Length: 426
Ligand SMILES: [Zn+2]
Ligand SMILES: [Zn+2]
Image (cartoon, rainbow, N blue to C red; front, side):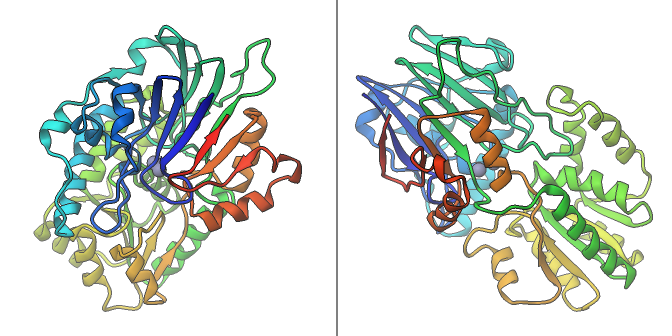
């Protein structure tokens, strides 16, 4: 008997962690935190850890990675399989997570020693995308780029006579990041994958990226037309760099004020051609050479940039506006109704961005830039990965149930909307 236990991440946004068990062996897909109340963690069962043979980490985002040190704290001695690029990004996330806990007056449940104990195996050293490789006798694995973040991947596991697919966070709509579509997972004798765990973070949302971009363009253009300034709070890695390149192309006249930490990541991205679309490098280079970037890193430079420009587009770090910098910009801009704030991602309950949106100010907008899957994307993935059991994850139970209703009825006997703590035998 093979079973999946949800340690976190289904029926909620955050603490992704999926335990697979067969006989005496266990595998774990991701082990993340949830950015609420100082940090929520997966339902780790310490008694399972001596049987845990390997952890597979899809990408560096905190909702997939921040609880990994807890495994080591509780005695896990095995390896974490992930990309080198993900491992390189993690120190920044661990630091930010610790600052977040501190800011909420919560003690981290682990220390630096447990972070240092993480023993990585780099996927790039073991196999190329889309090709099966051996993890240990009895477990084969293949991975592919998932288009969500540099270094982000999906996994397929062939273990205990079962074929298992985990999408990680997946999108084919990134303007910069390349993706390896999960096709050809089945062997010649196989008709179905036995279990698929699929990113369905946007629930039943039917929109494509193009629709969101049109709305972003409209709000930005309208604000600039009034000589107002637009503030884009974005995460340090990820959609921020995509939106920067987009803004440079769509608004060639506007001044761009960009926090240095975001520019550093854009430079970094330019060194990772393996993760990029064919034309992405050229577009990034045009952006870097555009000559109208005000790159800022301290209050004096920010004041200076703001004082000499009207009608600018500002990119600051922290998509949920938890950073002091994002809040500083907001306070600086809030006094004029000409200005606008555009939030483009997930806003955790109680975050500054969420509270701001709740004030119903006409200046604060929420327009999604897609880095996950909505209804049409999940529908496609169900075709590429025909599965006897599919668990839709990464959204609230209510949103997941709505998605389930919107999907073809004949699929319903194979689709699952689960919550943390639930078990599925497959
Ligand atoms: Zn993610
Ligand atoms: Zn995620």
